[in-house]
Image (cartoon, rainbow, N blue to C red):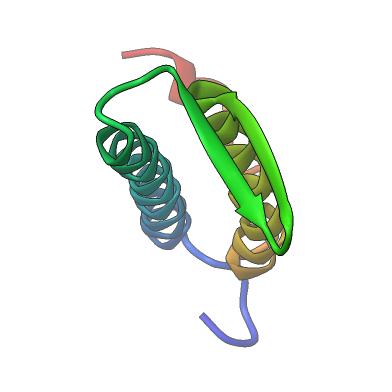
Length: 96
């Protein structure tokens, strides 16, 4: 793979691996949201405490913010891990 363009199989395996990790992180954000809800006996709000400040808010919005933050941080990392190549699709690939 080094010094030559990646094959289609290599590109597919890299793409599948990136998709797998993105799904894992999404699942972890869902688990954290459920854990927060369980910590407050499944109330709709959670008092997020940062230092001396307390921010009561809707748990789903906290979970959404966490998911967006994780996606913002990890997307450039996953894009850097993906091998860059030109499109090798040919016309016959579209027909069975």
